[in-house]
Image (cartoon, rainbow, N blue to C red; front, top):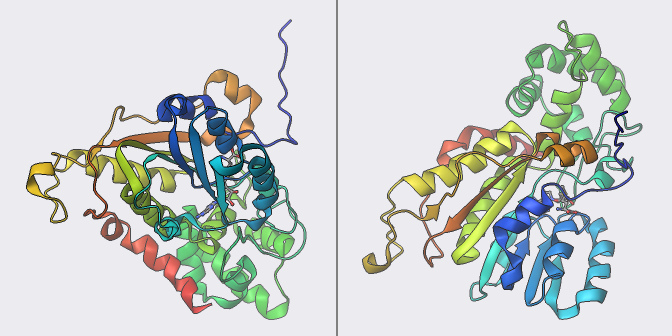
Length: 336
Ligand SMILES: C[S@@+](CC[C@H](N)C(=O)[O-])C[C@H]1O[C@@H](n2cnc3c(N)ncnc32)[C@H](O)[C@@H]1O
């Protein structure tokens, strides 16, 4: 008889942890930046190797308690900052020997299950979706933006085919009453003419709202640029993504800087490498069969990494132009 392994759904599992560790090799020591501290799974594992230091960031102040636990154990080898990773260059670490910068995007299990955050369509109560250090909530978006703006957000960040109808019905309903999480789910369900039995009707709109409220696209783009700046030669940037938009951005950033010859005006010509990054493998790393059975959230996880080929701080990239349309949609939120 085959045994069924049921994952402990009350726990947060660090996704692709073994794979990440084998890429960043903390056994040789060095300073690492964990851009998405969360429940501290990656930071703790790195610190278990002697001669390592971790600088951890998280935009959610509620991760501070976990950070305090690591601080008690590892003392001066661990530093935590409640910062967004797009602000990585505010850390004043230009002269630190950074060996690796890691990102594990998305949300921790603890955040998803926190009813106050209202990240999931199972939540009851007010719309929120703020991860931390935000300027507005999902409630502001749903109740204040125009029909056209809502349609754009659902279409580009959720790839929702029925964006137009959903946006129209939201605007109609909000005149009558305030829209909370469960009312939004009902409006979406009523608006959809095509039922997809594989995913919940509200999945795509909720994904779009989370991305918009947390400016996840701009965060990722500026996070990647700043990570590459602070990393030292031979250091690694490793990123775990959970949806196709994020993966597309990471893939483009790594591919363009590892294929295009980079004559940089910031570097003396004798020190110029032919390209700024080295990609050891083109395909992303995905979870093993074992991890898939133990950790449901690893299903959509993709790990990509690249190695920095020279010491430089400033460099040229066209990633902002390439994803300008998405950045502009996120900037609609600046009016809120
Ligand atoms: C999937 S969890 C990370 C889990 C972590 N690797 C672990 O092993 O426990 C993602 C974390 O990143 C944080 N986060 C997401 N976007 C961020 C950003 N732009 N800046 C800083 N932290 C961010 C979230 O608040 C969340 O705590």
